[in-house]
Length: 140
Image 1 (cartoon, rainbow, N blue to C red):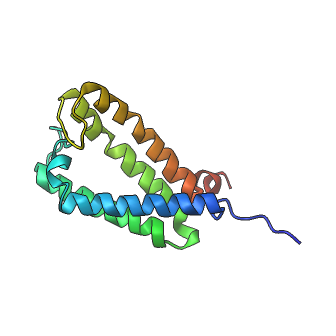
Image 2: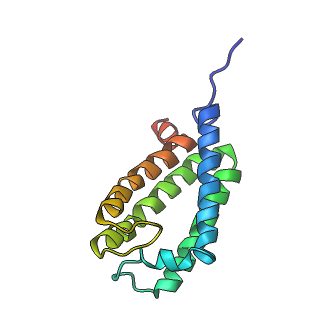
């Protein structure tokens, strides 16, 4: 007898979710420590908080999202996927600001590199939704 596996429990999705969670925890940790200066280059001028405050808060958010991807119960994974996708969407203006204002950070020291980086954000959004089964859960 075979049973249909939940859309968020395939081996590929599990590995994808764990990898994304670990990347977010690492990225968030770098916001609070060794990457702090580089992250300041991505804070758009219209953000009403100080650059450093924005970097610290986004670091805490990334650590929280990463930990949630790693440890949330299966019943909440779809919601965590949507939260992560929303977060990746919300921080996209920072990537645009870095490109528009030609700010060097993270090895993105040419216009070409900064523009190519912009295409990574939709991939992160898709990764969050796919690895958590968020789209499949919403369709139910």
